[in-house]
Amino acid sequence: MFENTLDNFAHHNELRGTNVHFKVLFALLTMLVSLISTSPVVPIIITFLMSFLIIFKAKIPWKFYLKFLTIPFIFGFLTFVFMALFFGVGTTIYEFNIFNLAVTVDGFNLGLLVFARIMGGFSCMAFLALTTPMTELFSVLETFKIPKIVLEIAMMMYRYIFVFLNEALNMYYAQQTRLGYQSFKTTYKSLGMLASNLFIRSWIKGERVYVSMESRGYNGSLYINNYQNSIGIKNLTILVLFESVLILGVYLSGNFRLF
Amino acid sequence: MHIMEGFLPWQWCLFWYMVALPVVAYGVIQIKKITDEHPESKPILAVSGAFMFVLSSLKLPSVTGSCSHPTGTGLSAVLFGPAATSVLAAIVLVFQALLIAHGGITTLGANIFSMGIVGPFAAWLVFKGVKKIGWGPSIGIFCAAVAGDWLTYVTTATQLSLAFPIPTFGAAFVKFMVIFAYTQVPLAIAEGLLTVAVFDYIMKLRPDILVKLKVISPKVEETPKAVA
View 1: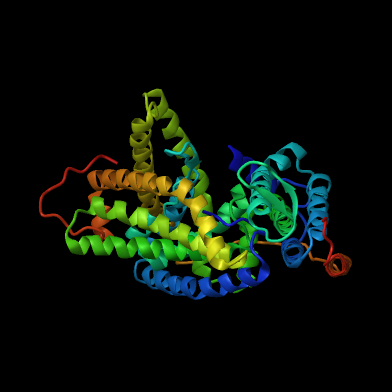
View 2 (view 1 turned 120 degrees about the vertical axis):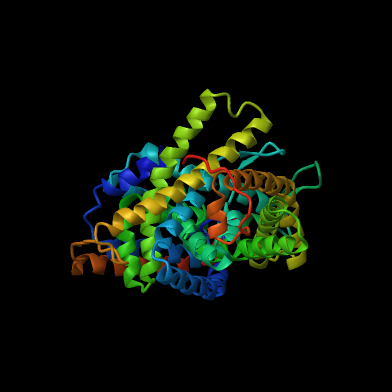
C-alpha cells in the first residue's frame, strides 16, 4: 500500500543518519521562508532545491516522489485557475467570450503566488516525511514541550494506523468477494459494516494491548531509545547561510510580477 | 475539508494557531484526567485515533459524482466528547499531512480549528439537543454528523475568505460557499448516512461499549451479544 512504502522510505534513505533536529529545523525554516515570500520566485526555487535533495541526496526514487507530489500539484493548479478567474479586480489579461469570464492581473498574480507557496511548502513537508521516521519526529516534539501523554497516544496511534489499514483492506476484499459494493445502496451497507466492525475490533485490540502492556511492566509511560549523530558546526553554518540567502531572495524578489 | 500547506498567508496561520491552541490544551488536560483515572483508556484513545485516520482514507461515493472521505470526527465527538476529539483530531491531522499529503504543517492551526474544534463541538451539541427532545440516538447521530460537517465547511469558507477578501469579505465568502455547497452538501448527508450505519451496527453488536462511554443509557432488556 501507498502508506506502507512511504513509511519504508522514511526508514531507508540516504539521509536517515542525519541528525533529526537538523532535518526538522531545515525543513521548517525553509517552509516558513516559502510562506512569508510575497512573490512566486523563492517558493519555486525552494521546490526545485527540495526536490533535488529528496531525489539525489536522500535517493528516493523519482517516480515515487512525483506520485507523492501529484495531489498538491493538482489542487494547487485548480486553485490557480480559480483565483485567476474569480479573484481579480482591475485590468484583464485575457477575456473569454463565454460566461463573461476574464483573467485579471491581480487574480493571476495571486493565484500564481498561492500555487508557488503550496508547492514550496509541500516539497519541504515531503522532505520531512520521506527522510525522517515518525518515531524520531516524536522525540523532536518532546523537546518542544508537547505533553508526554499526547506523544504516547500519537505513537500508539501511528502503530495502529498500519494494523488497521491492513485489516480494513482484508475486510474490503472479503466483502467484495461476497458481492459487497455492487450498487449505491450496498456500498453504504458494506462501508457501514466495515467501519463499525473496524471500530469494534479496534476497541477489543485497545483493551488487549493494555493488558499485554501491563503484563510487561507498563507503568504509564513509554521509553524510547533515540541516539542521534551531532549536527556539527559545518552543517549549522550551511543552514544559517542557506536560509539567509533565501530570505535575501525573498526581500529582493518581493515586487516581482509576471504581468 | 483540508486547507493545503502554503495556502494561507502567514498572519492567518499564526492567528489560527493561537485560536486552536487553548482548546487543544484544554483537551489535553481532559485526556490527562481521564487517563489518570482509568489508565486502560489510553490505548483505547489511541486506537480510536487510528480508526479516525483509517476511516478518513476510505472512499465514499456521493451523488454529485465526486468522491470524498468521511471525517469521522462527528462519531468521535459523540463517543468521546469534543475536548478529547480536538486532541485526537490534531494528531490525526499531523499524520494526514505527513503520510498522505492532506493538509499541512503551517495550516495545521486553521485545520484543527475547523475540523477538530468547530465540527465536533457542533456535532456534540446537536447530539445532546436531539437526545433532550427525546428522538432516538440514530436520528441524533445523523443530525450530529451532518451538522458537524456543514459547520466545518462554513468555518473553512470563512477562514479562506478572511485570508483572501477579494473584493470584499462578503463576496469572497459567497464564492467559496457556492463551490462548497455544490460538492459538500451531498457529501455531508452521505457521511451522516454512513455514520448512522456505523453507529447502528455498534449498537447491535457491542452496546456495552456505548453504555460505558455514556452515549446511550443502559437498557433493562437483555441484548444478544455477538461473539467478537
